Length: 436
Image (cartoon, rainbow, N blue to C red; front, side, top):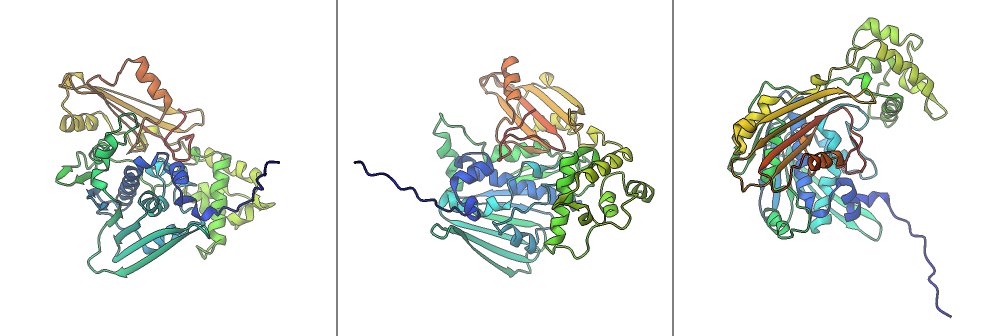
């Protein structure tokens, strides 16, 4: 009689999810070959957001060597408290997840991937952060038996580290990774660091970017977009996303992060167009003196109250016009193409469209096209969502449109597509594919 296998029911810790190649691939949305580019993108997004909130004209530098890659900025800096919180793999830390707003953070993968990915990819998990007068060294590894990430965080005061943030990620053979990957023509190739930095310049005309001896100067420092610290619009929420936000505030209060509970009126006042005392009194009639935690019913936020609150807030405010989110504009696209691509100027075409989708969310869609001067050149496609480049075409509808328009890989053309929206409907955890 053949021997049978007696299967054991093993326990798998969620704490070490970020420390497996499978999980990180799902988090980042790409195979391991793309990780180092995705991490640079994550850090550049953080840098731009921080500078904009600090009302600083962004200048972001990228350095790539054989041993590490580094992203630095001239922003207000990242706090020691934020770094410590991000090292807790029991909890997901985010200041953007529950807010509906057109931000780069919607496309991000969080600092947790920055700490974990170097160890998973190379077996050496070391990241250095210099900011706000401190130098941090984060070293990670994994105890596979107890299923727990081993994290060492050492920080010391450095008087020389005053302005901006420098994040250095130790990654073996960083400078030669692209050459190695390009040798395999059958595999999808990540964009080069030069391409990524250049693409950031496309979508952020107010920012300067430096890579080695190459610099993309800001083309329009007066250009404005929606910033992460701007009040969000209640018209961007539905009853479910509003309930999630209220629940997140209550959980934040319970966890001891803030000594003062938030009243319903204070919550209402945080939304765009609802700072008026008269509007707040009208909306919160019947909620006088009530706190958000008073809206709990049967261990959940009372949905009937949420619906009534949402309707009243919408009745007393106006929707944000799509272009208020931040139109990049024809001139900014054209100036970038003239500086960075050899194009036939007469071939340049630009089109824009704005409106509201079926969920009443505003959107801006911009497309520009040009023919390259060199007929031997191949097609260049640059896509971006909320002012950050994507690592591939983010929607099948775009690929289908290229086919219908007969824009082939061997064609000497440049096509740039950008879309801004308060919330995208992604179909994967890595936020690389969305449903248009």
